[in-house]
Image (tube, rainbow over all chains, first blue to last red; front, side, top):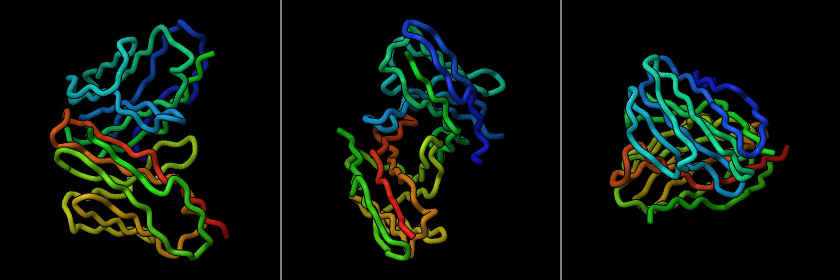
Length: 112
Length: 112
């Protein structure tokens, strides 16, 4: 158990809908990272927050957004969902900006 | 373009048959190389961080090594419980802060 929690574990929704994924970091971690993992693409970095501020952006679609709250938990918002958004979404957390990242158990999103 | 390539894609071993997994990388400036283990449907589990060429780290039956162009994960006398996908990731010094680039992984199966 990495100490990182993610909710929900599974999410099934329809195309065009909007969902919110939640991540709670390990105690003391200030950085939160979001990743998407699909069968053909592997793990793709989406976005990083450090102590409430956005630090880096990867291959994140404009339909997706994230934020980190004062208590350091983070939410990833996915809107106008498409079939291709079906994937595992992981958050990872770390102490600082470039420290080792510890992954949560993931949220499996299925868009029908 | 920054890239991480892992080989082989899949590896089948008999219990006790030692072998190595390869991770080759091309990045503009390596800040760190990470090895993770991932079981199906679960989040990646941190194994090792390597920072400079010549560095080695060990944990139980696993040993990770790093050169200027590649890293190896050596598995000595593997057991069936070592079956998993092993992921390699690099932290690019010249890229956006917090940008981990993952390889697609090596799926290891160890038969009793």
